[in-house]
Image (cartoon, rainbow, N blue to C red; front, side, top):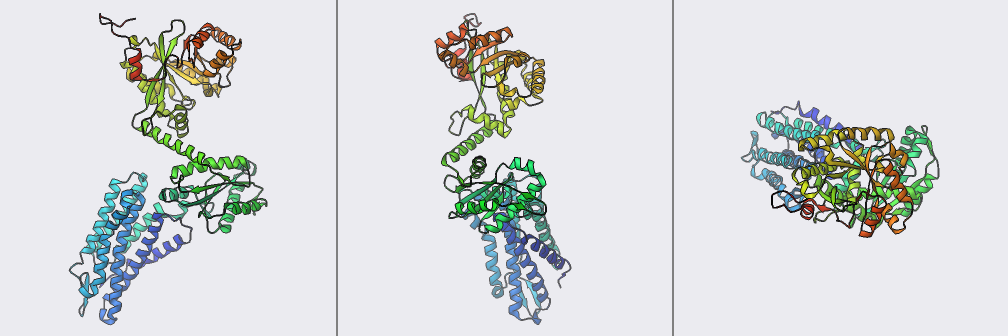
Length: 639
């Protein structure tokens, strides 16, 4: 009555997959646990499918209790399997509201009802019935297809609504395995006497394994320990519920050791260390976080002091094998999870900083992560989130600070300064977000927004009423390294129909590292018509000889130089300014805070003055309101 030609090979393939999967270490995260449940449910379904189909061919030849047991077992496993495939989809996408206890309980209702019907079927005949003439489908048999259809609809709905966490290939895989389940259900309905559904489910499991569940995705150092991705996934899944301790082990001066011993010997050494940690501390989960850094994750009562002592004793001996002989030194850190440290980004960033601190300390006594370090890490994440939001939503603001002509005391130009706000609408200090933008690689997008909005202001504002001749725009050292910088800036200028003379580009001494690249980059910018300003002079390492070959038009003296001279006048700064003048540079003095400082800098040759004495940086609207001159009766602006 039933054809077994498809199901038996499927069972053999599944057993091979199970044996290989269970032979490797597995991280205890939700999707891995659900996958284990799926392969157990699929194995159970196939076994009961074979047994129930076999006895149903001739039920009179077997005890009725055996026939009923095999059939109930098959349908129960079938319904559970349908739910688990949906739950795996949910685990991949992790929509928080769908994983709440109430919603989870509601999603279990279809499988719960079908299990109840199945358990009652031997007495009611709802799903199937077995009589003298053999096996027959019951009046509620088609609920089997309805139950599976419900979970497939929930899966596809979840994919549509919450696909963002997945990469393109992962999204394709999750759609494909659900389509295979749908195809399997259709084939089961059209060809009920062929045991095809299990084959389609096996194909779905293979796709899940290849794309999401290969244990080697999470393993490092020849499969001895989990990798950094595994640690991140574990922390992210348990955000808000973490409790325990971390002992970090870092190889002292790992980059230097890798240069000394070579990459092959060091890789062999890391494998030996990983094997030692796993065998010596079986109750802790061991991760390798790249660059000679190991993480041992355990309970709150984990004795980090004793563990670090034992590891130090081992490091006093040689790490030796047929392929390597290494003499290494270790350093340690400890960190409490939970409480202040519960967010994944906080934990990972704090760990990286703590590893660096431990490596510098190079002590056998673990370095404890302090509350200040946690707060600093959290502040950086707050800044990064605010920065990303501002860039992605075009909310980077441009503030303007006036540059005053020293002799006349009149407004002549302004400096454009980037500003972003936190969730409360408060301005975040530039010293915080600029460095984050440089490290994250988003400084180019930030700089482009500032430049574009400055161009928009120049295009729409009445410059004659302001008395402005140009605006200075800062270029970060990282931004200045961009090879197509000049073309990018020129393109934005053309969009707004502006002349490049309206914008002066400020670069710092920090940008002047590679002489050949510096001159090439400055030449390309100058060819586009921009003028260049050397910002913050006095904080770096440049000299007059080097500046002589650079096509600057203006040098801005850092406020530290200005304050020092105004507090203790001498001949150094006046002589320096005289030399700049001889080189045809104009001079801007920053940090002017009162009229006395303005007068002193004016007398020694400053052409332009900038500082809080004149104004703090203002939003473009406030700048216009403060400096725009009222229109003359004849319609022109007063000069």
